[in-house]
Image 1 (spheres, helix red, strand yellow):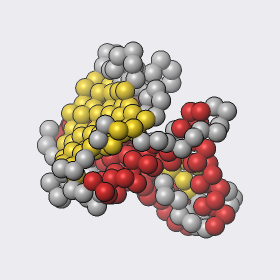
Image 2 (cartoon, one colour):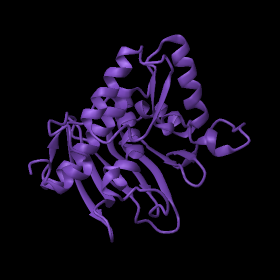
Image 3 (cartoon, rainbow, N blue to C red):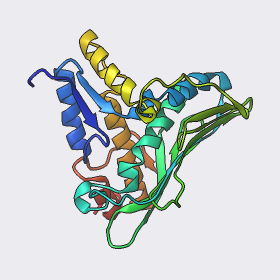
Image 4 (cartoon, rainbow, N blue to C red):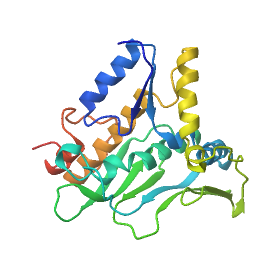
Length: 265
């Protein structure tokens, strides 16, 4: 309301009702709200997404973020709103949506999910999610806090004509059919802030606000990701596929959707 451009961290908020308010506020203020999905601005993801269309009809899409449970923060508290899928999983889900859109798949039409909890709390620590597209493509997303000592963040996209593979950790790399693809040189003193899109993200916020453009990572995109998250928790709770766009309760957190059997309780 004061006229400032706003960077909203991920996940966008805890409920779709809250997301609706943020999207409405962004619309009322010339879209000067950027959803902080930094990986959308990472050079390795930009290069990957830019090459997807050349593969033709996709037959396989998998995005994984697997690491150890954080030792700080309140990520497993009920008040947080959700666990590994809600907090960490928004990254691979965003990448899956960007890749699918670049391949001409459009938006997913349904989601199924299996969640696994941990000791001493009610949150999920591991999630296996399948996004179903109208074309028949089933994209697989794994988000886990039950990984080993080595963090795994990767993307694999395949068609009948080729395979694209990106590794984000520990150092971003990209391959096409097993051959390395050169990524832009890093100029930042701390490589990670450039490799993982933080520099480009802030530049986009400044430039989009100055030019009156709606950010690529708009509040509406953040809501789209949260919508998939809510549908996935609902699917895990009900044990059935949940259609997209999500038509369930908009006032419940993802964790509440899971533990209420999909929002029906």
